[in-house]
Amino acid sequence: MNKFLSITCFFIYISCISIAQEYKKSPAIHLYNHPGSIAAISWDGNKYFTPAEKQFANNPQCLIKNNKGLYAALNGSGVLYKALLANDRIEFERIDSTVYFGDNFDSFIFSYRDTIYSLGGYGYWKTKGLLRYYIEQRHEWEIMKLNQEIPVLGGKIYDLFCYDQQNGKLYFGFTREENNTTTGKESNSNLHFETMVLDLVKKEWQQLGTLADFLKNDLTSIININSSPFGQMIAFRNKNLFLDYANNKIYRLSDTKQREIEQLPTSTGDAHVTYFIGSTFYSWLTSKNLIDSLVLQAKDLVLLNEKIYIEGLSPATDINQEGSNKKTFVLFTLIGLSVIAGSGYYFWKKKKQNTGFPQQQENNSNGNHFVIPFSPLEIEVISTIAENSLKGNYTSIEEVNKALGVSKKNIEIQKKQRSDIITSINKKYSYIKQSPQELIEKRRTEFDKRSFEYYIDNSRLNEAVNFIKPGGFSVQT
Image 1 (tube, rainbow, N blue to C red):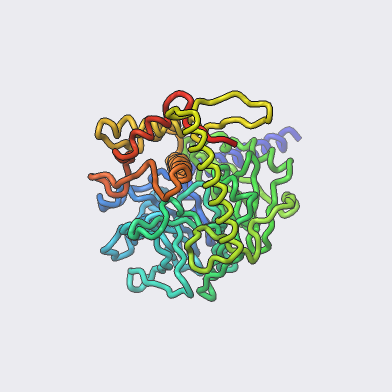
Image 2: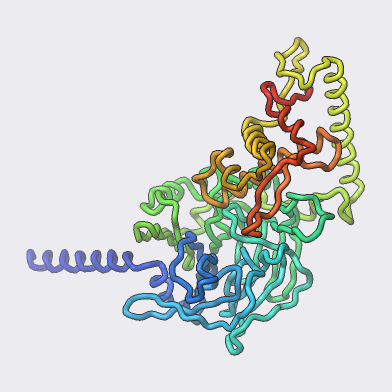
């Protein structure tokens, strides 16, 4: 009996050692050894190999796994590598013959029916909606014709994007673009809240509706985790949600599963590789080379009384946009009249008080009070940029990040915070001036045309200085 128990314990010990050794392998080896296709692999942004070509050393790297093998694509180019296993190590060999590059940064790269695709991306000062596919026999990329071109950008932590590999559909809760080639479009209006789906079988885009307020009003709380068999898995307000685009339903993890996922050892880190194999969720903490997995089932999901999108509704984001209906015109007219009335009252009050800018005042007996339209954070940004502009200098992205207090945050959070704050400042300034003027402008840096620096025009500096005086700039409510 003792001998049997000893042998049993020995085999259990050997099994545990084998599992531990398997877990010590890199994510790339684990993916390489998987025999099937994986819809989406979310990599933490670290480089897992060094390209032979120096000009691609800093390009974001994307892993793709299909039935033919494991691939690495360099985003912002057509460069494609295939993984080879040598001495228990992954090596990548280039397989494409691409010459031109720089036309598809932040594109979505994925595999469908063992063909690798690249959708959208930014390049040459404009976002595109081209769908490219890789032809193995020719070692090059070709364009697939679609019914329309929808400009899309990826690479944001708050992306609402789900790839249903089984049915060949790509869902976008909203789309995002940048267009610096024309002046007819209002700056900073780069988010389009139409919820779209691309059918890879029919090669057609279709609009499902417009993004519901539940998600739209709190985009910065969204962290995209990955596509799953249950829809897009996201972190949202300290909960894990699943967005089922096909059925327009939102689920949350049950309390039991939510605790389980929060207690995973890999949940404590901030650098992850995540993917689903079937309904099993894999999470790698690459800094410690640690892996966790968790099986999820339909019974672990709780339906919420919320929708992803409102069906049949098209958002009107631009008053001058063709196809704006009468309701949209009336709505914006009412908003415009309200702004004009509020601004008129402000200037009347300003003239009556005969002061440069009114100070904040206590509440009166009727409950009316003054409010400062620029928040403390906006004042800090205006102050930073105005101070540099008064000296004839431009303000770098790093200086704006410091003013916002996000210098140590993820680069995507930095971008979002800068965009939101500067957009808010410029909209408020435009309301005050009753004209489409911007207080804070930007220009491309001299040495890196992909980056920007900010300034306030000399004609608006006096106003900017007044905005940041004690008491700020006030309006009546």
